[in-house]
Length: 112
Length: 113
Image (cartoon, rainbow over all chains, first blue to last red; front, side, top):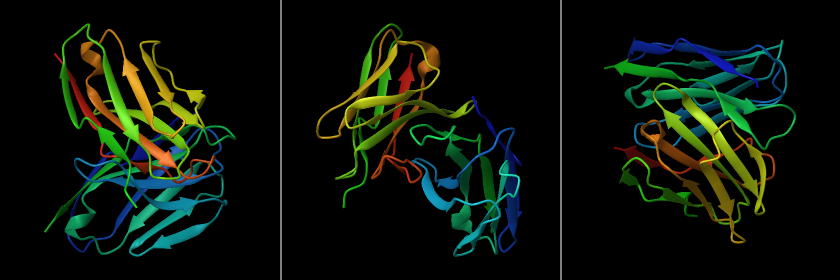
């Protein structure tokens, strides 16, 4: 089946810094999703992308759907302590949406 | 509107036992997906149900099974538990047949001793 890869695996940054992470796949995705998981909770959807080249923002978060449709990027500007958590990219496997697969995640730590 | 509710929150079992986990989706949501989350493997897809029908299944042994009831509530069962089944089991619901917006519960943390 399709697989998603994320980099970096973990990040330690100072509060106020900008963050960039990416997600890649060997096959095409028609939708890219970015989720965030806080400790002890389930993932929460941050941004959904539906078209190649699409750039979408949600507050300090900006995500882009790569033009090759095999990658996506998430940027966080001016990080704050509550940005701590694990960020997952995800997408529907194949053309149906009955199976959404997730990348391994990028763990973000913010140093005050 | 209440979120996705998973019970129990924590569970401790011994090898060989079986376990049933419950998930109540957001009211009006008809799709329920289950995931296994472990530190080494991340979020692994178990199965997805829509209107009581299993539409897709992940690459897990037959010991893992699930079902969905007419009120959209879902259960998953793991028989003959193994140590490697220790994980956080997450349930997610969606309001549409297309699951691009999954709403997750807080999960059931299963420990197998």
